[in-house]
Image (cartoon, rainbow, N blue to C red; front, side, top):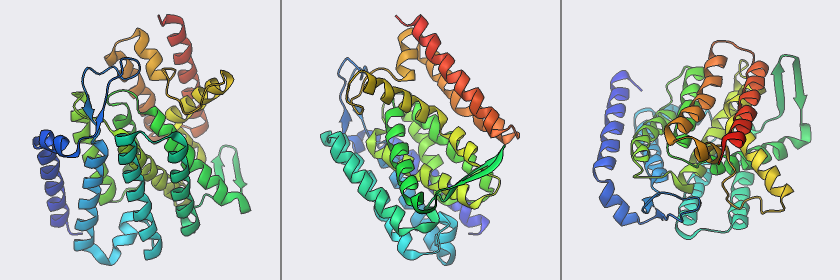
Length: 342
């Protein structure tokens, strides 16, 4: 794409997102998918539209069309680092299917088992159709070792995608929390690759405008948004891990640390208490912090925990050291919230 085409792309995205904000009240009346307060976990005062995923998928569609129109010869490479049109079609199918699954779940509250089965089928389809997306090994710089999975590579990749989607869905709990997490990660991906990627830019634009609505409690991301964004984030992180020699396994773990460690802790706690592991409760870190501190302190603390590992890694800190620091900060936060909670 020429510089003038890129500028036009930016302008069009901005105008579209502004139009989405301007016509938001009309859009929510047409789609009619709301998060209804229950006075237990959902403490907002009135129903809030679950249209974050609609905004993100709309931005993605615009970037697909615009990129294909101006640079169709290298469309696959610049968009997904793919060279197979078949894998591209399966990627699009999985992407749209996850979005539609989220829409159905937001509208009708599907059972956790049904959601898990459908997500598993979609991820399996992707893993068996695109070998370049498979994690064959884990690579560490300190110590300089490599763990190879051989025949278990596809199974390992499948499990990673499933757990990531589940974890990030559980992580979506208070306003701006997920938006800040996804924004930080996708911006880091742009910085690491050092390339112009219209798809990632469209995601970032969508998240910025969604954050405005979300902060004002006018819109939630919804399962359609979390399924979509968690899948895309996992997709690009696997690409980074497989194709960039400077990206090690510790880096990916650090990027995803907060939602994954919190989900692991909550799942283990539910298993010990003989509760359903997918049954929502108020035991996540953001719930614990909110019991004592106000929203601003809670979101400020979570934002720090999300952003600071990216800053440390950018300035060359050891991935292992950053992981240790994150672990200390996380469990210190758990202990503090336990001691001060009412």
